[in-house]
Length: 544
Image (cartoon, rainbow, N blue to C red):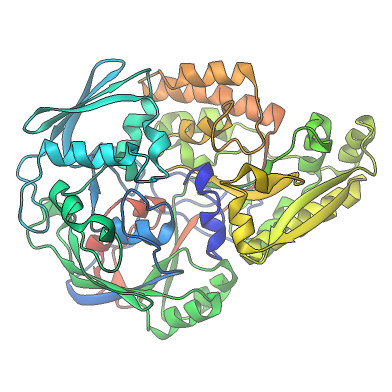
């Protein structure tokens, strides 16, 4: 997901980044990408129904409130309970969801025609009033939604018919409409919001949405159970399992043991440290799917040694990315060519080969890097990289950066901080003081690379180092006002070029999304679309 959610992939000890292949079909990674693996958007289809299956999460959701859900555990559950106006499919396409169609009569007006006859879990019918209440709640400062910034260009949200909602923007904003396929576009019962009050989204409260499953129970500290919604509107996604039980296992080794023993039937974001063990076992299958993320180094201070472009380029050239992939991602990945991953270019796939695949592989040349440091008169200068016990991958990359710096004449200091302090770096500017680099992930909720590059605009919340480039800002506004995906991709490529030329973010590597399926189940989507697509509905028995 996006730069402000950079911590999320690091929190679980899973693969850190993104797809290494096309977003449809099974393909192999580019040469030099480590171990052999294939990427496909789906697993083999289900062959029959199930009474229930158990799904492993790396942590208990901190909320089931759609407006506050900004991490993998809550979104993985909510994807099956609550739905959005639009939908991201497993092959990374944006299609109609609770809105049967949408139009743009002028560049700053969006009209959504709602799907008739859709019922909430309590049997009441979804109306335009529910949509207006759900979206406006994201904008209310009292809600404290991390998605509030997605509505920054919205002037008004109004009911313009029983099944019609019109949104007017203060300026052209293509990304806003695309994010109606993610958490910002979630629709819930307005009556239930009023009834539940402060309990909404907590173990004490109830959810009333439209998805293929409803919330049956939340036993705090133990499990969450969903039950099949027999009145679900989308018959093509009628649930194949009567119930889904989510369990929470934070320890990576314990989670792998649960998958191998069958205590858990499956799980997303599999610990990369367990890839070899899970592949060697005979209890199920480890699969890889499309993703939209890349592991990056975000520059936090442009007034220090990294304010010199030659030093940033030198550090990038000194990174041994292939060995980083082996140590941090179980060998499953490829060096990142750009800050936004290949998988983020899925909205206009016909442009991916031209605009992303033609990018050169990142250069690994320690001697040339050393010369750049000398030219910058930076030999012996100090820079500080923050590290944490939050996840093994953080330490792996931090140590690799320290080694790279040593080889080219830089004095790289590692500053260990607590997991809480590490997470504060992404929300509190004061927590970045004295730091030069942080290991992060940039990923999209949608298959549009422009979503990632918005976080490098001057003054944006996700622009952690406060980098500013006037040419970049103008290019972004132009891209965000272009409705045609192919043309917008070409404009986004200009942002990509500026980012690669200036390196406010140093790309490190990409790995695919991961999922483990025990022998008794199949049918799950394999990629990051599971955060919003009702993935549990497609899981069934592997045999008739």
